[in-house]
Amino acid sequence: MQKLAQVFKALADESRLRILNIILASGELCVCDIEAIMGFSQTKVSRHLAYLKRARLVDDRRQGLWMLYSMAKPKSEEHRQLLDCVKAILEANAVTKRDVARLSKNIKKGCCVTFTAVRPNSIPLTLKLN
Image 1 (cartoon, rainbow, N blue to C red):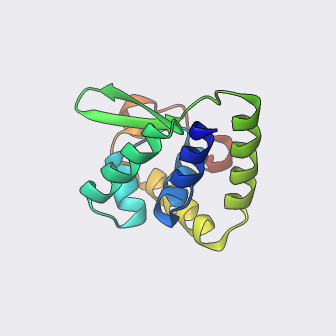
Image 2 (image 1 turned 90 degrees about the vertical axis):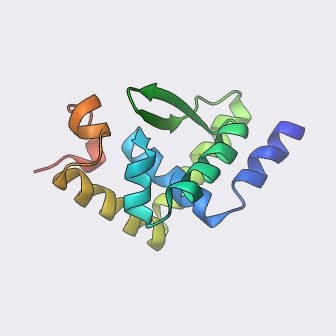
């Protein structure tokens, strides 16, 4: 029960929900990409990502100089159901839709690293460029 409470605490912040949403939409992002989309400082983004990581909602990996963040695999059926619900709610929200639109524009311009150097062929279907 304690782990579930930690997940809900992590979800109880607008900034963390927005960050989760763009990670869900992209598959994987670096801190620079999140900063550019949300207009947050590197410190603020890193602090929220650390919180999400402690709650086991996101995973990270190092790629050269960059730390890349992706959604963590659900640890249980309850966890999967919760993430599915959160994803559906976020996809319908006006603020998070704007964030995904900014993400799409940044991808077209060439994001920091994720889609231009590390994984150039991995643009999500929802953000395929014409």
